[in-house]
Image (tube, rainbow, N blue to C red):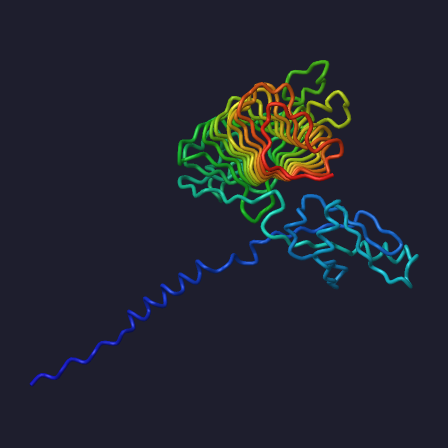
Length: 417
């Protein structure tokens, strides 16, 4: 008589249940603490017993914690007091007791080895954007390379211009740290990518951003530039004239449809804009730091030089930190249409944060932090339809939070003082 089969253990079923349970707990878990952003600042001056920090680019409501580092010592600061102080972008931290007041020399010694460290939830205006997955050939460029090489990692090319002439749809060009081109040179990215297969130029993750001098022009469609430093001035790349004897021009000129600039820094342009967009559709400018563009030594340029100058075409300006450009942070004029300006921090501009002018139409300015400009949001001779400013936090602009706004629909914006 055959024996009865013994029951098989239920290990596979138990293992499957454990996998499902682990997956559910992972999906339900909060984001890791590393998703937070940390910023640090040096003191700008010291008093008889305090250190004074100038803190720009930090939203008070996003502050999670703050601490003062003095050498190896760490001193926690009260979060609610830090948030309240940052409304004026200045934080004063006492470092000596009442008995020690007047010891200026001692405070200066402390200041030399002090750092203010602020930890925030998420981002403070400028956001980091993960480049979309890209397949295809990878090429490499290095200041120590040669354009006669094969463009591989062991044998990189020397110039971005050479790589731009070779890379096609789906290609990624990795730029090693170092300086490329020079003042007076124009680097053109003119070859088209394709939908789902763009041409990508990127700095190497985890390394210093490659520095590109002169002017960069994106003329091709579906071209992406990520993690670079576009450093001005451009030098003579345009015709010289009475108002522009040096032949300077915009630092980045975008004319290709579906072009993209992410996670980069644009600074030092002396002529009209850090970034200029014209006749291009669905352009994306996201997660960049755009600052100190314009000829600050020429009063005739005080209404002409901007951070981002969107002349015509469509697209989005998302999650950038735009600050201390000569005239306006974002200038939508004269025919920018269907441009979304959202989640940016726009501060410290001599004319205003955002201006929408003339035939600009169907543009949306939403959920931005616009502060400490001459004016926050304004229009000029606006005749285009469908322009909306909504849910922005507009405050601390010294002449007006809202200037002339004829033709602009205002919805749910918040501001004070």
